[in-house]
Image (cartoon, rainbow, N blue to C red; front, side, top):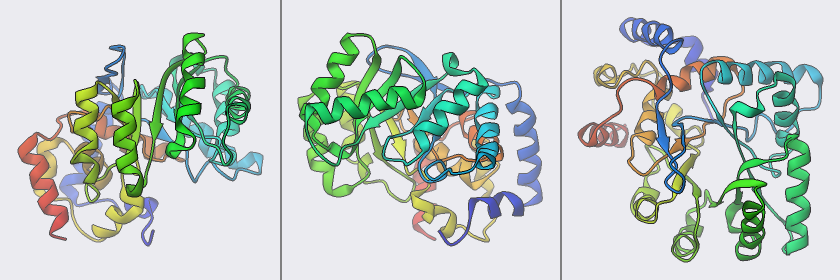
Length: 308
């Protein structure tokens, strides 16, 4: 990523957009986050959550947890619920579990993790899942998904057993690799799933062609990873002012534009951008308030990014 998210926030935007940001910031202290329903249950969750890949993966010193603790505190304060993690994200599960416990906010959260194996087999999966319970310091996990289709059939059987026992609430599958899309679609057709997690962004729309419509048809909730296109989107708009139409969808930053495109898709339930600073929570949660793009605006957004 050639330009950091931090540089965007520090640099700000044009004066008019900055005024809009201040207005949204004040609104953000009062207005609840927009929510969507999980099709299999009818439960509602906020349309923007928090991802823990990268910034939570290599925490070695106590001081490194300070900004992460403030991030989770701010998430709770602003009405956030969804935290997505994985045992494959280094120290992330352990750090999340410790901070959530310290802040005493477990009951208000929707915790999602994954079974992510290098080796296959039922026992290996059970061992890793039990470790996730310990690291997250909880006796119930809201969602566990089979990560990147690793040993999918075996692990889904285990997850169904855990769901039946009441230890997990939802099950699913994930991918962020186009080469897995065909198998991913087939699994969606063959299995009864509560969630999928997949990559989707304003400049990465391939999952919108088949996977997202299939999720809608099958009644599967959709969690979106890589919503900023691994940093490509911030790079693409580096040095550019927000377009005039940003105010039509109550966007005060590029991050909000990118996220609102995603969460306005009818099939998408929640996006989980990585957030390791409280200021990112404030900014990203702006995408979960105000007006969302309609179909015409979504096409306008696509044309805009395609033309850069």
